[in-house]
Length: 365
Image 1 (tube, helix red, strand yellow):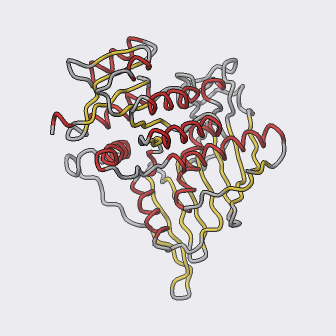
Image 2 (cartoon, one colour):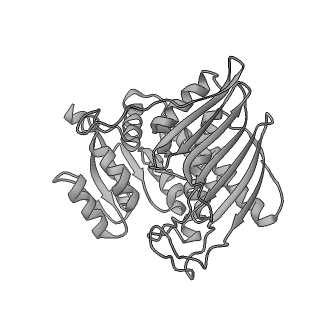
Image 3 (cartoon, one colour):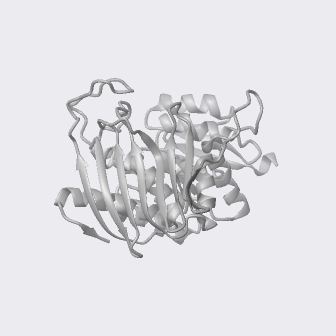
């Protein structure tokens, strides 16, 4: 199958490329190979090519030159948020399938352009919400689809860090990223919650955005940030009302005075039962299902098998599952797990939260 492998181009060779995408793609040797690498900093693209490309790997500093290569089938767009939309549209128009990192875009108008380009070109588009591929996420999703919780009418989306403001890249740059913790990690929690509920019809949003700890960089996991250059929010909260009356409370923070930290988690409350994704003291994930059983209030925790050193399926981390499912959707012409239509709704809600916080009013969608 070597000659039939999908040829992948990487646009943006920063942290998320080296931490998730390129290592995950490198494990899919039967499906794909990375043949081109692009970054505005030549050294980054060259390093990526050395580590993940073959001897013939091409290196670019302008993504448009990479897109001219007709041998490339797929591109992964791993740039700052501001660039997601126009690079995605250009890539789709160039005949490439596109995996774009989350969030889809900095606002819904830009995300809409991506949606329209995918429909116009017939090429596949997905967004990098890899937390759907976590073991606990997959388990809870199955429970929801089987109706174990009944009608889910209330949910909480959690993306709470105590002190973990990213101090590298452009995370603190509002123009490049569109925001801070909300658009960075709040987007994951919101995506998961909407997916579990299978409800993508929001009608109104009320949000609050805070910059309260901007001048208190002590104790940060990634070292102290510079208060003079941190131009994005440290915490944000919202109430989202859906067309069917269901309600979602979203909490997100990079810095918050709390000990109840949990990231990419959801709590679901249904007519037949509830489920809460939690983080244990040793940073493991668990789900607690609750219901009434035999007339008694009951809690149940699914047991995950203990890790066994050197054994088990290769490449079972969420990033690798995401990469394989994405590549297989192209080869088999099936729908990727994360559809652009779903990601578009996430972007709509994020945008509405920022607008509500700015105006002090509820925003109707």
